[in-house]
Length: 308
Ligand SMILES: [Zn+2]
Image 1 (cartoon, rainbow, N blue to C red):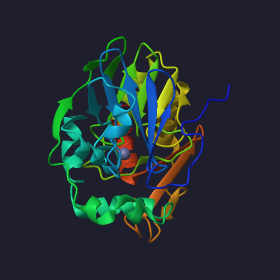
Image 2 (tube, protein in one colour):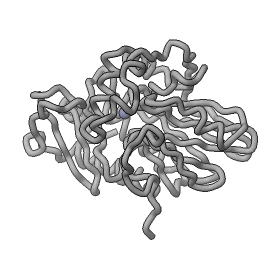
Image 3 (cartoon, protein in one colour):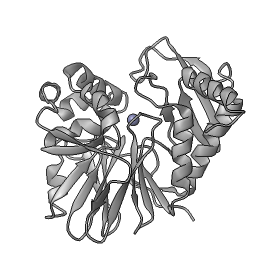
Image 4 (tube, rainbow, N blue to C red):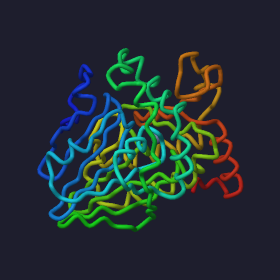
């Protein structure tokens, strides 16, 4: 069965729809920012939870408070800029401590300018729509970050969201599992029809064997739908296993020379002129750091070919 997509298609971005709110059902809203990041508002009987805070291009509190009068918390799936910068609108946000330094490293005008630059190829008038001068002056300093770890539970009343650590894309990446709805909110740890980025410096990302192990743990959960932060949402629960299989195949058979290309001069995702490495399997496109491949092959040598 074909899944309905949220949002159904890319929209022409205006000042009013920089963040588009789409109701999925009586307990879930998707908040899509600038045709890029999906945030999720989960509403229980007593509380609500905003999963990810986006680029922070606009104040999104109204979009939440128009649809629920319940108290709500904010949690970020990881410390990357397009997930944490919107925390500036809120007094408090949750994050895995392992990504706290990554999170605060985004809190300066240079990084904020990079967010605008990353969207400019798709939205040429993004500076005007966002109000560039004002955006570059914003800061996370008024948001207090509180830390979550594996097993922590947000009880919304009738719905619970449990924290699962998924180190890989970043060291502190987490997913939130709602067992009542068999739903997993997966951040940037798995993607459908979107590049899965595992190409950051080894300082901020985790070892591949840890990534594979974490996905193996998630595979044991009863998941019907996965809600990633970019690309197509939702995806079938089988995306977890497909991602794990892809990483195992990559560990065993990837040839860096085959997927190597030079990062173009206008790229804002990696250093222009450096090398970018790609691997595709199970329909999943991985963009990886070649040092991660070295890392897992060393691990396999030391563990009789085991990948986890
Ligand atoms: Zn990310």
